[in-house]
Amino acid sequence: MIACGSSKDLSLIKDITSEHISIIRVSTLPTLFDSVELTDINEIENITQYLGGLNPGKSNTNDAIGGMAYLIEIFYDDDTEIKVVLSGNKYISINDNAAHTIPYDEATVFDKVIGNILLNQYHNQYRGKIIRGLILSVSSATSGSSIACEIQTDDNSVISVSLNTARHIVDITGTGRLILLVGDEVEIGIDDNNVADQVFITNSIGM
Image (cartoon, rainbow, N blue to C red; front, side, top):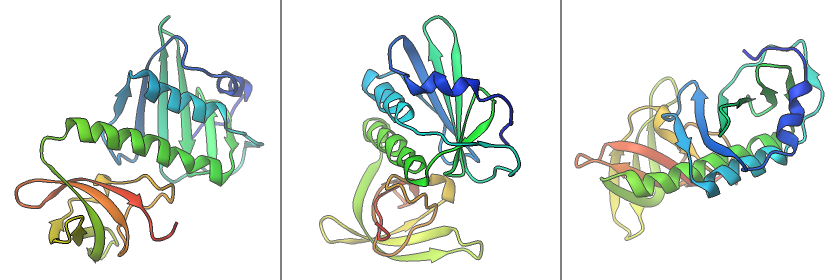
């Protein structure tokens, strides 16, 4: 839950730039991916440009704020810090102050921003096999989470992949899904037993 208080710190992100920022750390509640620390200037600029372009509205004083949240911690060279929380594709708060509404279309863009950063890092860091292709079928648990899928890869072969949990699915299309649907285009890191390490939805049938 996000605290409701003064809105004075909204000005901290309106004109934010990458200047003098040493690290940006991004994590999620609940955990959808391991927290990531960004030091590359281009990645930092992607985050600051996004935050600076938001248009926060009125403050929220009554509604409980639920749903998935991004925690964005911005660390400066002088050891100062700004903490930004984006919650439920609807709210933003700065340094635990008042939660303000933001347009849905602006909120969901962050899925694309951080998703593309994560995908680029994954390409550089993952030492297993990464397959790209189209989801042909999906098996789901009673909870609704995706547990297995069949993928038609770029070379037209069909591979059955076991999925661990929804925490390993990152939707970079901006639709905010944690499940796979037939027709999705994906990139998946797999081990020698075709068990997914990480799944990226790169194009959604809902787009």
